[in-house]
Image (tube, rainbow, N blue to C red):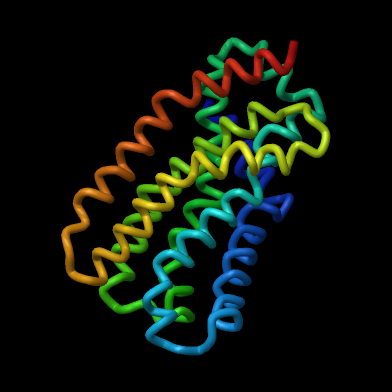
Length: 218
């Protein structure tokens, strides 16, 4: 399974659609927001936690359809499904590769992009911490959605409709953790909820996604 993770990382780097695409989309969202809401620094500081989390969420969403689609097109997914390794482990490695190529770069870049939205100084650490805890859940939930739509032509829109409602709790607790950190309030509850969502997604969704893949490959 480690070899599978390394293979997916190499493919993402060669294709250029992993690291760069999500970061570029995130940057565009953050740059466009001041044009839409105005240059009021106080307003930008107030909405920065929510905007940064929405931007990270949409950037993760952008690359979800690549998790299984390419392997399905070239037949690799059929080989993986019949290989002597658990399909649940394959799903977990696919989600891990998506997080390394999308969630991790967004987590590292978000504090820098917070400068463009006048994010208060107290929020940078909490923004990085909340994204580090929450983006693995986004990748795991996205892998489940990608498994449900694998094999469907033009399934990108359906994938977005399936996944976005499942992203809402992570978005709420992530933005709340940053907002509380800025205000000096206790961030324990939202960070614990983010951790719980991530652990629950990692424990349950590989099995659900593997079952969906088996059904779609029949």
